[in-house]
Amino acid sequence: MLKVQEIRELIKLIDESSIDEFTYETNGTTVSMKKSTGQQVVNQVSKVEERSLPVAEAQPHVQTTEPATVVSQSDQAQGDTTAQAQSSATDYDYEIVSPMVGTFYEAASPESDPYVQVGSRVEQSTVVCIVEAMKLFNEIEAETNGEIVEILVKNGELVEYGQPLFRVKTK
Amino acid sequence: MSSTRHRLIQLLVDTAEKDAYISGQQLSDQLGISRTAVWKHMKDLEHDGFGVKAVPNKGYRIEQFPNTLSVNAIQWGLTTKWLGQSIIHKQTTTSTQFTAHEAAQSDAKHGTVVVANEQTAGRGRLNRKWQSTKDKGIWMSIILRPKILPHLAPQLTLLTACAIAKVLRTDTSVDAQIKWPNDILINGKKVVGILTEMQAEQDQIQYVIVGIGINVNHTDEDLNDPLTERATSLYQETGLTWSLVQIIHRILDVFEDMYEIYLKQGFKPIKILWEQHAYRMNQLIRVTTHHHSEDVQFCGIADDGALLIEQAGDVRKIYSAEIDWDEKQDVAAAHEYGPPTVNEASD
Image (cartoon, rainbow over all chains, first blue to last red; front, side, top):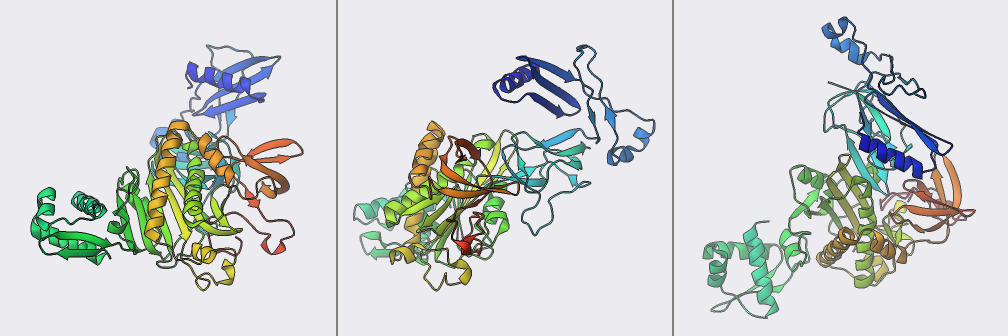
């Protein structure tokens, strides 16, 4: 969950930008902002509780490899009528984001295999991709232990600062 | 390098500057090592190409400096404060970038420099091959651990280009120009390639490795591969043979100064230097992003180092793109992706 200070910071940045609508999603928490008649509407949807099936504890492996659909519920404490229901298709709990603007490369060279694919196990220091800006090649490490469940960008695509690149189900 | 060797070299530099001699006993006393150890050090220096003059009852003096690369040769006369104070030299390595990555992962300190006489698998952007003829050029990687945010690190590639362009312009009198972000060209031909790689977390840099390849004493024959017609060397441009060691000294000197200015004052001073020698500034270039190409005016760089382009009064920043720098009638060179490799058909 984002801290109040961080949300405040976001509002300020969005306010100064030309962005009308903004959604930020991490760890099942979603923040949506929308500019309307000069005002921002801020929603924070609380962390999604994974539906715990009886088999989940007995067979945790099934849970992590099968993408499960989860539907978020709005934070009751906020009770904001403008809250929008958020859904995400994949069961994940960590996103690897780009530390800078640049081009996303899935492999060290066009001839080599991608660093990771859906299903790859990663550790803290596993290199998952390269982001290049101004001829600086940044090898992005997973910074978590788990399994890649979704790749959100395509090879050669331009990515923004902070843009999620991979979704990981942590171990 | 051992600190004793470092201090020995300093003592010999001081002696040479005073045109004096220093005795084996004095060296032994000042360094706290035996006369035999002093003698062994002097033999090592001779082996590296130093002309050691030993005069009975007077002592030692260095009268000739090596032009072949060695840790001693690079350390000799190097006046930097931190850059190159630790040097790793290899006769042959796959690539100084690989060696530097290994060193950085084993905690090599900020400012460590890796130099090789020859690279067997020199590489440029996305592992493209870099031709690295033995003893002809400078193949060097600098390990940095900057305390700046990762998204600012690309500015270091522009800074490196500025430092090298300055050295080439002042020391070898060539008209070195910088092609965004960091290739250096003379008369439109590539003489220097820079490849920067980083290991970073979201908000903290572990290390940056700046790889530098410079064609120095390559003759026409060395670069006569039909694929290399757009590459050049300092020798080809000036007709003179250059000391690799001296150029390395100067680059380390100027780089260290600029790096410190950058840390204190930010990118602004670097931007000004960069634009002074920009290749094809205010001319049309072709930029391709998302499989969409357009001819735009190159109007300089932004305060953060991004390429500034203008089309119909609309100015935009580019951080990453395929750029065709050639004048449009130049059909033979229609494929320009701007990789920092020297010998490549597409470059």
